[in-house]
Length: 83
Image (cartoon, rainbow, N blue to C red):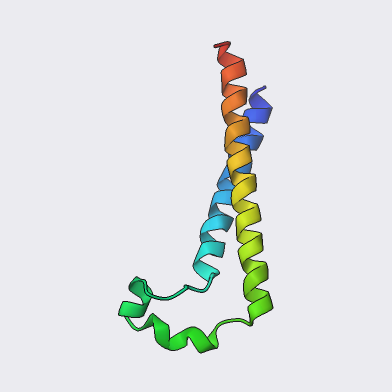
């Protein structure tokens, strides 16, 4: 059971880091803090529409995997304590 907990924690850490990186790569929709500081000027330099959609899909998929890993870790912890 200890190996499963360690594997889940490593997977959670990796997906957390990848999620942060993918969120930072996504293009902003405008009207936020990035536009206030001049981020709206570079919207034409971002990726094409299909690449942006794929990046959003990848980000959402990774977040769902991350959430499932956390639920799995919680279930393992609950089974271990017997509550």
